[in-house]
Length: 130
Image 1 (tube, rainbow, N blue to C red):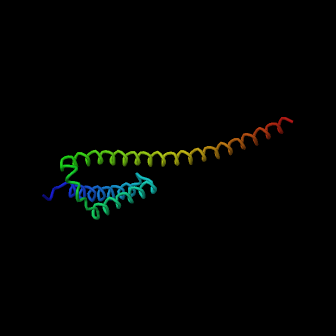
Image 2: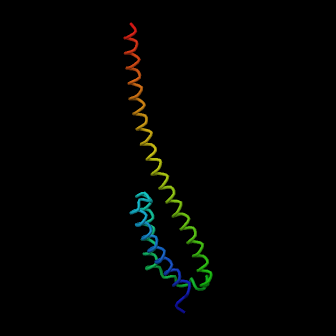
Image 3: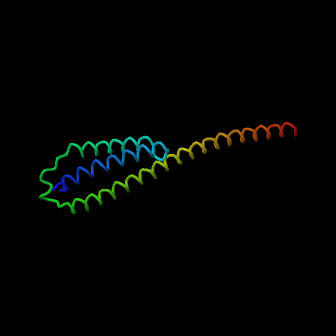
């Protein structure tokens, strides 16, 4: 039978690798994911595709049925999707943190400039009083 556990595993690895690669490139293009996370997910996707093409599970049929393999793959898919969305959120938080640190730096510089102006004005006011 062509739909044995080994074939389903190979098909799943190739499909999940291709889908991950498309999603990673899309997320990187839309600036939803940072480059470091995109690189990690891209390498994982390519490894999945390569593993799907090269792995030849011969005795897997005797240990896991086709339905069992599908259930295992559904669980693995849930874990992969969860990890992917967690990395998207972490990337978003990293970008927001970077923006906030830039804003804090700008506010600090503006605060220093204003403090210097206040100091100059108070010195000028004291000189005028004398």
